[in-house]
Length: 402
Ligand SMILES: [Zn+2]
Ligand SMILES: [Zn+2]
Image (tube, rainbow, N blue to C red; front, side):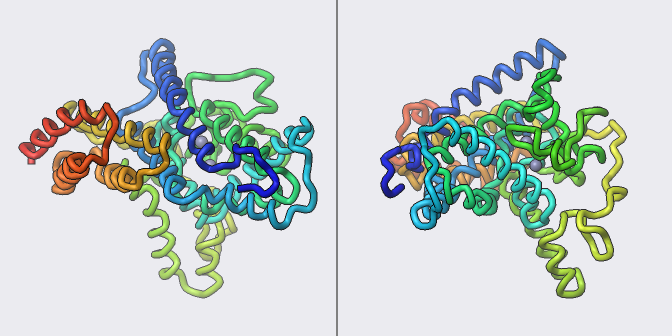
């Protein structure tokens, strides 16, 4: 991919492969978080409905990389190949320190703009849509966000080699996984420099004091420098100021775009219409760019997360089906070839909404599609063969439930 550079880390397949290798660590840390939370507070750190919703969003967000090469890296490599001004030595430690700071500063800028520009917020809000705060939330990512973030990295392509950039881009993402937890309270002096669980809890809060604060990725210094830092204070209530009340991964992605579309046409005047797209999500005619702080709903402490009651057997049904999808997905990342699996996962994650599971005709169609695809030998892993028996059992079970 990179002219004059043999380093294979720039190959997108290896980018996906690194993700593939990190999945067992994600699962192990999620298990550890459950255990620590139980020991500390006799409370589980996550819920089945919210957890499956977050993981489905995480899977969906990476599916386009399987079909198309990663837009972040392709655009970066194109600029490096054609327009670079000079080459920082890839093996110098100073290039590494500079890239660490560069990637993190760009992340701060992009992240802040993603909260302050409505059309970018429509993509980023997916990550904030959970009312829980745990390691599942870290994996709750937007499909659309990478199509808005790539452009911010391009200035670095004028002088930082793609191999160094790609490694730091992944480090920056991986670092942000572990800070999504309530089991780590305070890290003492590290809180001055690093983005920590405490700082990032504030970022995910919908309390008025938390709004538009702590945008940092790995370092918190950018927030301290640019005046967006806020320390954790009153108990944080997580999620969007106007909760979506859904676990549907497609709806969570598309609803804000529909809202912008409707507001765009309902707002009079050309300049106002542009402002609907490019000013803050809280903006309206006559209001400041980021909206009015007094319009942010007050937090009473009695907020209850969306949690429709579902019978235990339907929870089991959802978990088993999700296990199949996770297996298909890891196989897909390991081979990066099978488009059939890709479409199947897309179909599954859309139908796997717990509030509807077991009741819809779609669920029966999905099971029939699975059986058809399986019979034609597209699903090859060992795990499916065992799960197939369970699947057929559940299929008739859900059919009987109507
Ligand atoms: Zn954010
Ligand atoms: Zn986060």
